[in-house]
Length: 200
Image (cartoon, rainbow, N blue to C red; front, side, top):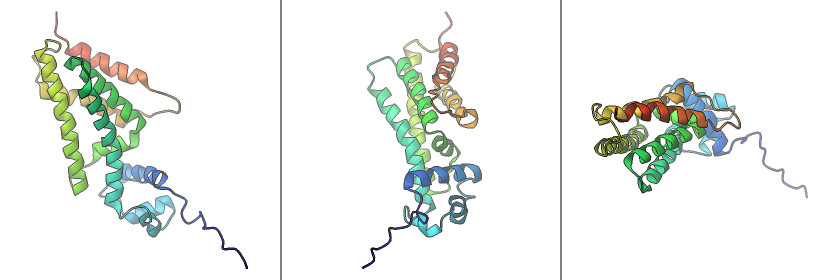
C-alpha cells in the first residue's frame, strides 16, 4: 500500500510569526484601513483561506501586532514602577527601555504609532498608550517636586516631548544586524535630561 504523501509546505509556507512580519509591513505601507485581505494574500503569495488558517481576520492580525508592541512597553513601565529610585531615575529607565523596545520591535511600534481609533482594537491600543503617557507625566511631576526637573515647563507637555523624541525613531531609525543602538538611547537621555535639569 502506497504511503500517504506528506503535506505540501508550498501551500502553507508561513507560521504565524513570519506571516505577521509581512502583514505588519503592508499595514505600515498602506495603512490598516487601506489594506484588504486580498492585498495581504497577494503580498504573502498565499490564498486568503491560508491566512484564515492562522487568524480569524484582518483585525485579529492588527490586535496581535499591537499587543506585541504594547506588551514590550508595558513590561518596561512595570519595571520602572518597581524601581526603588527617585522619579528622575525611573523616567530615564523608562525612556531607555522604550528606545530598546522600539529598536527590537521597530515595525510593530511604527504600526502602533500610526494606528487610529477606527476599530475596537485600535481604540483599545490607544487607551493602553494613554496609560503609558499618564505614567510619564506622573514621573515628570514627581521629578519637578523633587527638584530634579525645572518647573517652568508643563509636566504634560514635557512628557509628550520626551516620548515624541523616542517615537520619532520609528520614522528614521533603521536597525541593523548586530547593532544594539545604545548610542541612540544615550543621545536622547543626554538631550532630554540635561535640558530638563534646573539651572543652577
